[in-house]
Amino acid sequence: MFDESRIIEYGVRILIIFMILPLHECAHAWSAKKLGDHTAEYQGRLTLNPIAHIDPIGSLCLILTGFGWAKPVPINPLNFRKYRAGIALTAAAGPISNLIAAFIGMIAFRFVMAIPYGGETLIDFLNQTGPLYFAYLILSYFISINIGLAIFNLIPIPPLDGSKVLSYFTSAEFDRKVQQYQMYIYVVFLVVMFTGVLNTPLNFISGLIYDLFVFLTDWIPLLVNVFVK
Image (cartoon, rainbow, N blue to C red; front, side, top):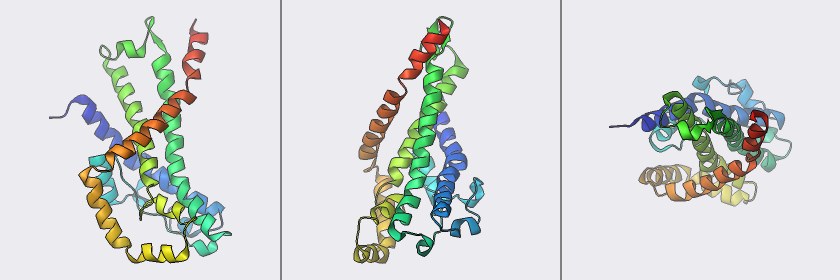
């Protein structure tokens, strides 16, 4: 039986599927267009419409594990002015969009947590005030899941973005070998992911990013204190 926090967590995961995964893929399409390739735009992927981006398996993985993906955005690297750099930058745009979303969420989170409520801060009222508690949980999960998606997608394994970022540094022969065995790599990756083996390293790196965002927003409580006194 799920408690309220678990229900909210799964609700936020569904929200991510319909709002953040489209943002992630649209960032790929936008980056590709800026770098000279209009393939994604012509195929209707330069959009925030979730129907254009949702991948059933990736969405299921996100709901069950907190990590997932959408349909890869099609690109034609031959259209890039710089072939390998174009592939890597287009791939990196998706995870970067997740980190930006997470940081914006962190700014909102720090403001909400710093605003006084009856002479105390929100954290002192979480157990007594239902709506504020839900806002706290929603923002917290939103930040954590976006950071997790960014780190997850940077794993250098096809079909994740990290494999394309890695291709900037690898040889054509290595890329051919990866392409040749991509299906096997993908199946093994799915099995490993569902065993939870990746959870510890991914959560560790995500925690470091989370702490960095907290550090970068430490000015917010100070700013709130200046204006509320």
